[in-house]
Amino acid sequence: SQQGEEDPQALSIQEGENATMNCSYKTSINNLQWYRQNSGRGLVHLILIRSNEREKHSGRLRVTLDTSKKSSSLLITASRAADTASYFCATVGNTPLVFGKGTRLSVIA
Amino acid sequence: NAGVTQTPKFRVLKTGQSMTLLCAQDMNHEYMYWYRQDPGMGLRLIHYSVGEGTTAKGEVPDGYNVSRLKKQNFLLGLESAAPSQTSVYFCASRDWSGGVSVYNEQFFGPGTRLTVL
Image: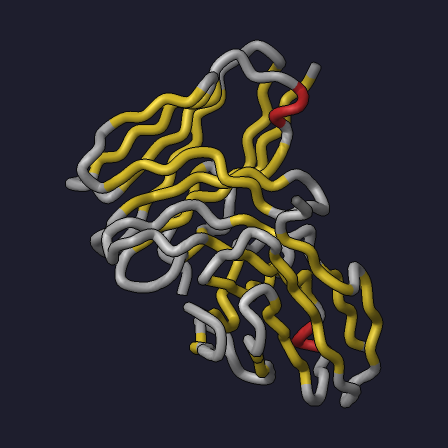
């Protein structure tokens, strides 16, 4: 069964705006990863945050992790049309990566 | 450095036919994975391998078999295809992390779109 659940399922914003996606999970984790999938392509790793970290930055990406609430958020600042894609969180516990169903982000130019 | 490649890119089968999907990686990764992705769903793990000659079942293994005879290749077989196996199949690999609590990123192939009629 899929552990990570992203919210919202779909998000549409204007270019230049910030996009925030959330991920909730059920069991304890070692780390949590975010991936991007462009239409018809494979997944690309964006960022990894370990269970003992609370926040991590990579370029325009900011990820937070709250293990007490079993949730994570991905913030994309100053969005671009090229950011249009599906975004998945994946949790790592005692089993291999378990993916959520994803958030479909549309950035309108 | 090609990364992770998958063969074929597209395939149409009739119910009951068999086929093998090939995944190859040139990064000398220990771990390899097969996932399927259905519309509106995330990826579900079919089988995985933690090293040459080893395989293990994932979340949805029924109807599939795998083999890892060479470190760089991971084969996914469908012995008797069913319409429920219509999906996009992704292969992924990752390096050995050096510890149970360290799990680094996975690298994905471009996918194989399979239709079973």
